[in-house]
Image (tube, rainbow, N blue to C red):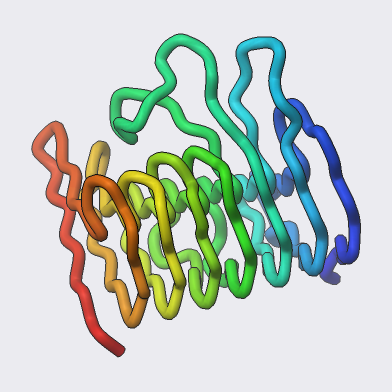
Length: 201
């Protein structure tokens, strides 16, 4: 069974718009999140904002959504994905294989899409990621693939980050422009290696 969350408007969320958490045992939680609008509020207190969060043994199809805003504004927030904190439009951590993040429009977050500790979990493709202030996409401590994403603005288009495990990301046909630091950047720490393999198609 797949839960459906479609054509929903979530406005002015302080921390999270939607969170999907899988069970520690048994079959993973499955959900389709489609054609919805999630807009973060302007925080008056220190917080870390997320549009959609997928955790642990969960499988999600995230498609056609418009997600905007989402900042981290407490002490320790910043652009370093290893030693600082960021907020995300879509955050995926330790998710089960089979998740997809496709055809979404994500803007104004610290990071548009962040895949963390989820080896080969996801398809990240066809998204428009605009003016996310630090990264359009980050793949950290897990192998991953991106394809045909349109990324503009912010500091870095795609970050491939190894802070707790070797990371290999295959980047296929992504279009990146107007970034202030780099289109693609490999960030390594603590004896681990980050590798970005860039393909035109």
